[in-house]
Image (tube, rainbow, N blue to C red; front, side, top):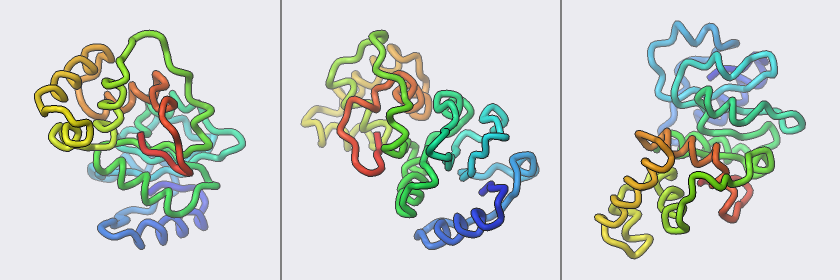
Length: 196
């Protein structure tokens, strides 16, 4: 976990360690210290405007941003952030974001959705492909998606192959990132904190 402010670090550590199955192994004051940490599975970063997202070196990042002036969310996503919450988010949202990212999905706080781009006209996905993409981004298996959508696993596999081709994505993390970048996240009703 990375946060410049010692009080924020202590608060984040308390929240994270109260979640079952989570262990905070490192409490760092800045991202430069992260380079010395051997391959963490997930990094929670209190994003300070002085820290450019491009400096992130880890693939799974949950970023805590300031709501009045959030960073460029697409830059944050490209820099490795898969979870985005604000300092106004409830403590439970941090746990939900971490869990979603641990499962290979994504999490974006509802108040940040307005900063995401509107859906692009290219590439076009069918409604069923968008629904499939949403379930893939939440970390569901093809079998689980098939049951939820009332389809065969083979049909879901076909949808996923078409989606990967259309979005030029090779894996789940890339699919999730591209879905957010292209604005497919905003096509679904959102709650206080929203999984895609």
